[in-house]
Image 1 (spheres, rainbow, N blue to C red):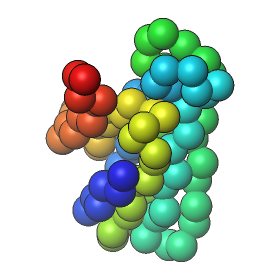
Image 2: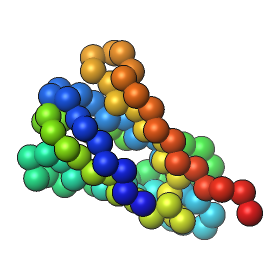
Image 3: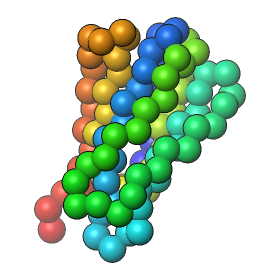
Image 4: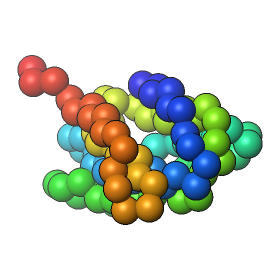
Length: 93
């Protein structure tokens, strides 16, 4: 799955992720406006763990992950105030 984001300068992206089923861990890739690729990983867990990408450059960014193996909930924040939230969790059945 890919999620396209519009990021403001200095923003921090908080990614809450957990593996689905028997996956050994969770993996999320963030492609930023300046061309950098940031890989965020989480351990095998029954609960969400938090990763973050801080001080991002302004512009488009893309968050990518395999939604069959990783559940993701994310927030963007500027300073301490949340500015948005997107969740993607596996559907039942």
